[in-house]
Figure 1 (cartoon, helix red, strand yellow):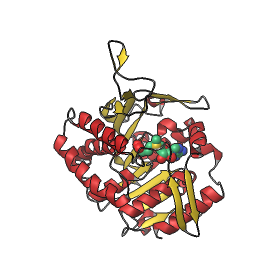
Figure 2: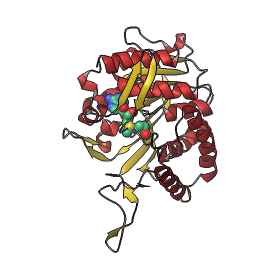
Figure 3: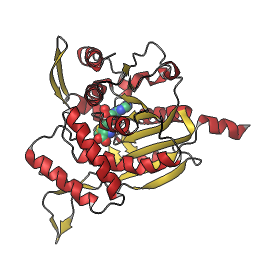
Figure 4: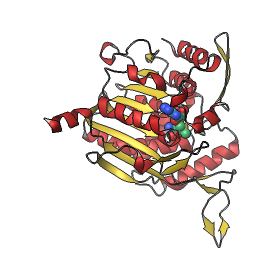
Length: 333
Ligand SMILES: C[S@@+](CC[C@H](N)C(=O)[O-])C[C@H]1O[C@@H](n2cnc3c(N)ncnc32)[C@H](O)[C@@H]1O
């Protein structure tokens, strides 16, 4: 299936007929989904404007300059400078193919991948990793993973309306790869397929029964989900990750959504037997430069430093070997 057909199918299902079940959308996304503007007429995209899932559509020259200043200020203080630079270079080529600018949002995902890469290599997962990404926004990270691990299979799970952006941009990044949309009626069997990108609307994840993954990634996404979705994803991962897995989770320590529900990183259903290889505040996700002033920012002599903004809360990340259902069964024998 080509990505044009996938985009059209997702448009029909999630924009013409709003078929996202209520239980997978948090109040945050109920609020922001309406700002996403997609219009397709007779198969042609007339408008594709995202909102609230990243800065990749910011093209104004001032935004781009501030984005590069933000990137430079982090890069100077981060370890693994050479690896980060190498990945930035590949990402710039990639974003050009996607028709998007390389921004700070891309940079923080590059840094996350550099951090995870070290462990992917250690565990010898680099040849053909099976990857699941939950909430990939524009599909930048999936496209980048495919770029550096060409043998990978990547399942992208997201709300149907936003998944359309992932199908569109991953299609532009990797037009000659195989792209597949899970429709929910049939069970998708990874063993029978040779798809590079599999798009899964959140409510259909249960149909991905026969899949097993080496690596799961969730960046800035669980922080905007309701409790039920977070529990659902953790139990899916525990059932479908291989025992020698990696789960990278980078989210706000605490976030209150418009409907009042609170998502707390440390209250996700972690288990004692999960092994955290990395567990700290995220060094490349603390502040950003922008003309738009957020509530908090660094101060000198009680005055805010111009242009420098903190995020609305601290961001933690963990790279974890999750205890899987198989591990539990072995423990019980
Ligand atoms: C703030 S964006 C983050 C995008 C990207 N990961 C990044 O770091 O820039 C949050 C992402 O989570 C997705 N999301 C929200 N609710 C979800 C759900 N129940 N299941 C899967 N993805 C969800 C959004 O559609 C969006 O792609």
